[in-house]
Length: 43
Image (cartoon, rainbow, N blue to C red):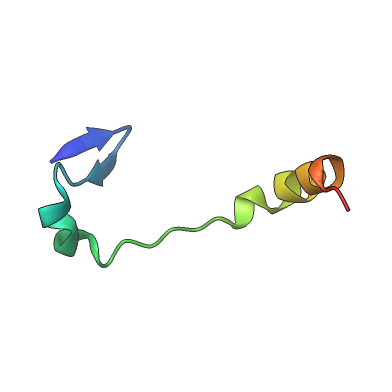
């Protein structure tokens, strides 16, 4: 198992089942996403 700043992730795809309970929260990116969308959205 490898770690990166306290985050565990599998060494190989065969071990992904061990991480099914992981939850990822992305709400903290909402304001940045909105700002980027206004600058990089082309119609």
